[in-house]
Image 1 (cartoon, rainbow, N blue to C red):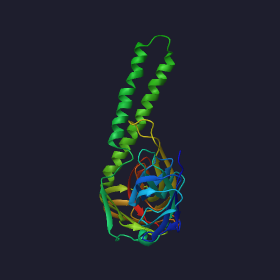
Image 2 (cartoon, rainbow, N blue to C red):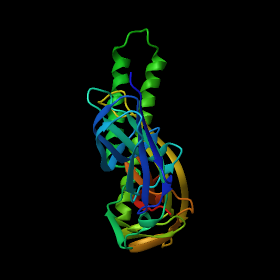
Image 3 (cartoon, rainbow, N blue to C red):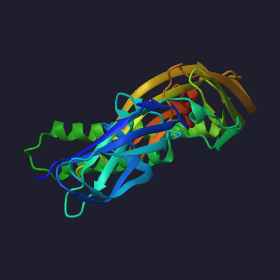
Image 4 (tube, helix red, strand yellow):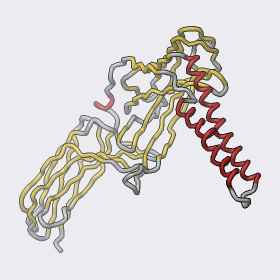
Length: 336
């Protein structure tokens, strides 16, 4: 078997978007080898607990022809460091960049070589969109919903009937106390879901139309984000009004079955809660305001299939001890 060595040497191992990344691919053979093409590209990929994702860009053909033994074959290359995403190493998720070179050899396994490099924050990656207001107008999403109401009804009226039928028709081998206990458990579970749904419906009716407003564009780590919530046609006495800033890594692991998704894993990066300033007794329209503060080391927003770093602002209104409304808006954090 003939020897075929393929290596990548980079002039530097990191850069900011817009900079030039240069290097040399060296090829060493001990017998004449003909290549259809020697190609090189940049690869952005994820690693960690989630299903792996990758994409390639800036592919180039460096050489096509014959390599002879005893000669030094070097092929220089040049790339522009991409605008992002920046390299990220977290608890569940890693966002990596590689330089990948591959030789297309007829009737042989194509040799491939990878070399990692780091995309640092800065340059074009730090540019921000304009501070337009991104308004999310929505009907209240209550703690209890119509779906919960249906499920609760099924549990209470449907599931409870199953042990009831068993109670009437089962053999004497099943104890009477066990049958009654099964009925009671199903009824209590259904009642809890019904109670949540009813409480949520009350909150929805009292709060009226709700609009959550968060400035659009992107934000830097350490920046303050103003939040507004407008109530229209509300008639209620609020127990509490808060807003929560949350950052998390969310990944979906690979699945052994093509029909079902893998397990979902969440690692919380940050959670902080602030009080929404506004009237606690509302009769008509009302405005609530607050500020949330991104931590100085906030990870940049990232989104790929089965892998994401996500920041959200969620407003919560509590109308009664067990009823309320909440709504979330995404916040895009740029690298810095």
